[in-house]
Length: 298
Image (cartoon, rainbow, N blue to C red):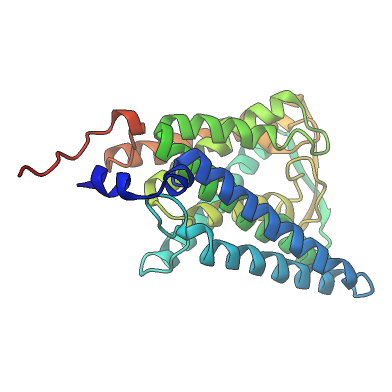
């Protein structure tokens, strides 16, 4: 029956509904909404820096969210909304925020115990709101909507969960190569620890709430609480801290994300979430390996 409905669609629709084609269309819509948001935000230069950042964030997130809700969720052969608010959404978001904090707090604690991380004075909270928006909220929303809500979703629909996890993790790591103090090892760490953790969280919940909470809290805890560089970007935390020691432990200016400490802690959390997803049978087979529904007999 499904095949009969599919074959009844016009050719252009069948092409547009092919997962990889749908992914490209969704990515173009996402990038167009982002570009429009940046263009609208340019005249805001005379405003104060925190106010400008907040208004820009509202514009960018609002436009991308509108594009997602009105256009992207309607795409493909199996339309669905990964940002639909349900009874579980608030719980998943809260768990993501808590887990992101716990993972990075544990990594910082281990670094402190090894003498790699040291608090040297009070922090500077004058830019806290600005950095909260720029380091936590925007990356947590925008990056996860793109990498998990678009790329992972349709790569998985085409090639299954394992291909989606591998490909999006590699792309997520590579996307950080342009950051300050980035190295190939740093990109490798991001791909393994964050790509696995965030991809597995998406597989487990089939929504973006847990994933966005994880990402935002991960960044905020590093930078705005413990004053550790976030993906190479220097932040101002609630304390002033100093990282020292071997690059494999300190992250060599990129942050604990590029250290063996962060790699071990976050990867362990990602493997646990992946195990939960496997137990709950959230692993999707490639489209060519899925059983086809039998056609009804006459």
